[in-house]
Amino acid sequence: MNKSNLSLSSSFNYDIDIENQLNLIADIGFKWFSFGLNLEHFDYLNKGSRNRILPLLNDLDISIDTIHGESLYQDEELNLLKSTIDAVKTFKCNTIVLHISPFQFKKKEVENYYKIIEKKINSIVNIAETEKINIALENVFPYHETDLLLEFSTQLNSEYIGFCYDSSHDQIDGPRDLELLDKMIDCLKAVHLSDRIKPFVDHVIPGEGFIDFEKIAEKLSKSTFKGPYLFEVMMTHSKYKEPKEFLMKLKEEGDKFLDRLARLTQQRISLKSK
Image (cartoon, rainbow, N blue to C red):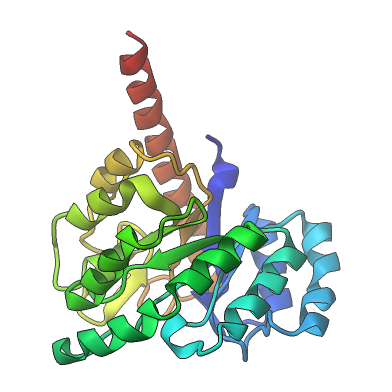
């Protein structure tokens, strides 16, 4: 494992246009990038927009690892999913991250959202397997909302469909244990890492909040998922207010995390070989 496995999302600061974002992260040494779900910032569904930045990505030697797509419950005919797959193919990445439901909803609405998604399960599996594109379903609010996601895990019987673990989402009302990551560990297709300070103050750089990233690294060392690891952080609540300073600190903390993960993984491999 090497430090090129560190990725970040365009959501770190949507006030910076996509071209300036890419130039800025390249200067700091990032090699992986992900498009967040803000089409006003960068419309990855638009072929012209995609073609506009392809030369810049090539020049800067930056690869796209994931794209955050529209929630499946809103995608009635799965046309947005199909369009996002076109974007994935353009950028030669292989994973789309999706929510299956609203981030938070009332418990009495569980059955309604279950029925909406259940009707689409076979179509989603067929699309993923036909296109050979990974779909990573992301945990949302950590109660009945994420329970609904886990309930579908037995129906999504495909090597192309798994989970995206988001640490900030998981740790709402935390500190909480990492039971959810244990449940997802064998089916990870993507990982979103960021710290949480308190309610409504989250997606900050590891070390700014209360999440135990040593424990997360220990658990991820057991996974077959080997990255890139997306640090889905935002400047909104960070104490680092200048973009370059923010990204340099993220690079520092991200590299520390990957070094720790590499050591734990190697230790695990060594123990197995004895």
